[in-house]
Amino acid sequence: MESIQILDAKKHVGETVQIGAWVANKRSSGKIAFLQLRDGTAYFQGIVVKSEVGEEVFQLAKNLNQETAVLVTGEIREDSRSKFGYEIGISGLEVVGESHDYPITPKEHGTDFLMDHRHLWLRSSKQHAIMQIRNEIIRATYEFFNKNGFIKIDPPILTGSAPEGTTDLFETNYFDQKAYLSQSGQLYMEAAAMAFGKVFSFGPTFRAEKSKTRRHLIEFWMIEPEMAFMHQEESIEVQEQYVAFLVQNVLDNCDYALDVLGRDREVLKKYTKLPFPRISYDDAVELLQKNGFDDIQWGDDFGSPHETFIANSFDQPVFILNYPKAIKPFYMKPHPTREDVVICADMIAPEGYGEIIGGSERAIDHEYLLEQIRAHGLDENEYSWYLDLRKYGSVPHTGFGLGLERTVTWLSGIEHVRESIPFPRLLNRIYP
Ligand code: 4AD
Ligand code: MG
Image (cartoon, rainbow, N blue to C red; front, side):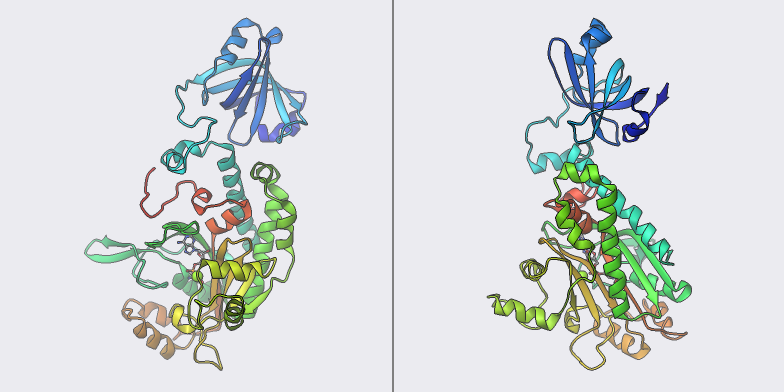
């Protein structure tokens, strides 16, 4: 008899198979027991009929506790009433690991309780669905960049540089030197682009941000492509194609997860249409001011109510172009005809999910960059390797960073970024 994963049920209809699973829930009458089972790939129903299995197996099934691990044997059948679409008619049942007083019961639990039990909460159907969407976004990311001639390069996690400003750095000792946990792999990716042309990274990044919002994590994963011989307009096209590709793949490959999450496919389909709208920072400020936001002046950074208002003015993700130089990092390319703005774009997700991409064309002039590094109070010795890139065949180049967890949160349609990563690191939380 074959051991299978229930996700492959379609290929085994009518066959008798064995599946290792956990009991998520159960109900029973005098003659029949319905087990809600989870095998890691999906949730499905197991049906135990007393007249078919006999008294002993039936009693065993009826008395299974939540999260008991079992090996079930039985026939795979179609089940049109369930979300998943297949069930198993159980003929044999073996307990592998007992479970007593599982803390997460089908009743409602508070967020703190669930967060304290994140190691168990991950087993629930909603969390399961979110992680499947996360996995699909990661899979589709590799597919997109491999297909488009990018090579994956892994920047270091322990670094001496601070590309995104010095206020939210995680400092650590590196023997007798100081080091930081990476805020962004960008500067290293620029070196890689000069070596390989088109590159992308996917890795963890760290920001000691004192923000307690539904969009901020302390540890999050970023995808950072960097492209040599490329200007900003072209980078924006890569960005919109990439994001539309992610949405299309979630639509194509995450049917079950989208059902569990109750995510409206018609809404997601709008995000596969190109191009995405673009608005300049200047026009965005004007739009806000005209609509009663008197707290915003030219030069200010947008907060989340501002981003949400701008996003709601369009029904796709929107690019905000060319922010004031003073509120952006040192490496961005200055505007050719304006002193006060840089050549950059943020992509703001619809439905209030905030900024999912930050990117820019990079300054390529050695003297300008050196001046910016000094003006931002950074130690130029730490950046001499980076400045070297502007000495030996400096070319126009551009790149961006997509925040994985914000993208997962958005495409899953969930409330808070803490559910988009298996073990979230939040202000005040490093357990479990
Ligand atoms: O806009 P950011 O800071 O851009 C950079 O780090 C650039 N160096 C990227 C590049 O050009 N290579 O961050 C990029 C994205 C944001 O748009 C957001 O999606 C995500 O990273 N992000 C966070 N996600 C969760 N929690 C946080 N604290 C985040 N900070 C940024
Ligand atoms: Mg940003």
